[in-house]
Image 1 (cartoon, one colour):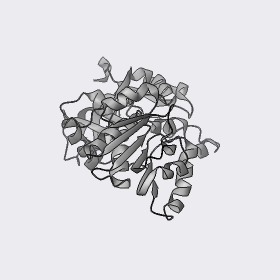
Image 2 (cartoon, rainbow, N blue to C red; image 1 turned 180 degrees about the vertical axis):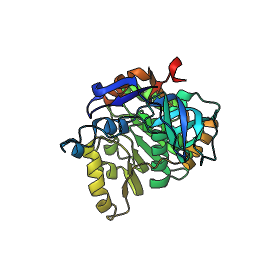
Image 3 (cartoon, rainbow, N blue to C red; image 1 turned 180 degrees about the horizontal axis):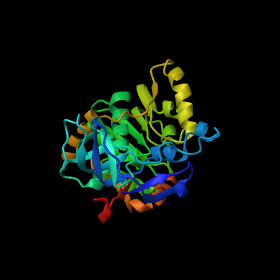
Image 4 (cartoon, helix red, strand yellow; image 1 turned 60 degrees about the vertical axis):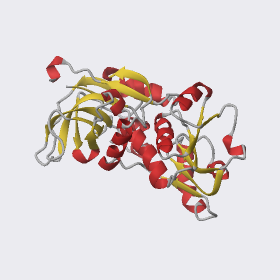
Length: 324
């Protein structure tokens, strides 16, 4: 089969589109005929390697050369312990090495694809939408009628966060750049702030919950914009902002009523089913800016790394005749 592989850690140019052996599912896995995949900031980490690993001699070659996690496709085969899926089922979720014509996934990381959306739409969902859902619901304790602000509302996590927050019947303010104002309105934001013209942290407005999908401000700025008892949830931003949140959040949360929380999403079937229901009801609609063929995965990652993508970037997979 054809797949995207990395023979060494490095930039997107280090990725290769080449012929590799088709994987075989373990007892608790299914083999998926991939129809679409999507790219995530998580893939940069996989592609470039952890900074510490890059400093250790002899660890320049990845043990697993495959890349990609978000996937949508059809079950090709199932391991003997799999009980929920059978060949032919259309599924979405996360899989090892999703940037390929075939990939394996454990059944607890998959759900049936909603019948009313495309494979491309389904592939855009898993990591970004679950991050948004868990950030709002589990860490932010979102409640009806709250004032919720999503910073970075036009990106992958942000576009899902705006829609999921609206499904909880909250008043949502989206923060994005000028070029994305119309997109934010189209996905249901009640208010839109163009950050090139207004700094919401200095406006005097207070919010019950702030989700930093792409944090541009310091943790202290976000806390200033919280109401009494408010929660700031960190789910994205540059490394400096993330490290600041990891180090200071536990300490600051002990001071006063305002809380700051950082987390890493847990991809699980239960939440994939929650998202499936939202997708089926039309309450969440994936925003996809660009689709690339699988062979152009390096270009897709280069574009995402510029941090200007609107919504998600998706890879479409056309199967060659010798991979059937």
